Length: 281
Image 1 (spheres, rainbow, N blue to C red):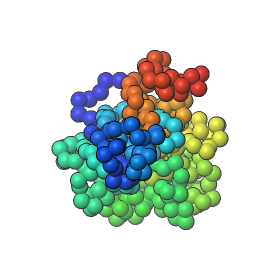
Image 2 (image 1 turned 90 degrees about the vertical axis):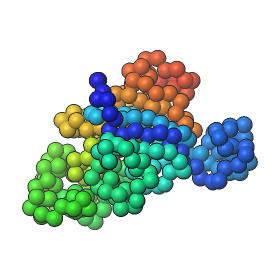
Image 3 (image 1 turned 30 degrees about the vertical axis):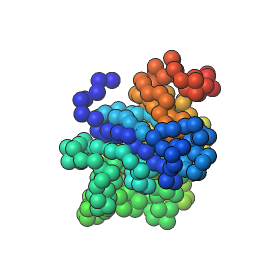
């Protein structure tokens, strides 16, 4: 894939720690750490000095074992929790010239509602289970300033149809749906305001293999049709292999390897990545 020069999203030095740190662990010192925990002061370095770029129309994969920091990274990118340090720029926010982590709460809400979409691993985090499916989409549209009921209903129907939710069920609540259908509604909601980038966090975890394959096929088709950028987080390399153009591997809060997904799979350099790839074979 040829990348357009200016990235859709750029992250530099993102860190998220829980605790104040001490002389034994600050500045990347690892002598007194067990994985990402400092045994002297108890500080957890959930994400440490992570940098990457995502280009228009690119699917960027983030893979790692449980506890590697990939979900915390996604929470920071979507402002679900604050960063300890770091910068993030979005091409469509002040022409990529302002660090979004320093934006006001109001501006962060604008970014979430207009420039980003997120699909959570647990649908209960991304959907109101007692709203109708089309009502969930309308909620995102209203948050972005839409007020015309007819236009919102048409957009909701268009999206539900695109993610293969039967329109005769658009007034059903997600609580009545299977896990796969709930994820489809989440995806429709995330796409509602045509954001340039969508974050997908472990969206197939807990789904049956057949349902998982159908959801992945749908995501791949949507990404191609809409030419949107995506960050796809998974502990499963088979998911990353199917979707991602480039992949970043995380371990204990740090990036240990980044490259084209084919290169990562065919010639992994880090011992942990080699173990991941061998488990896939």
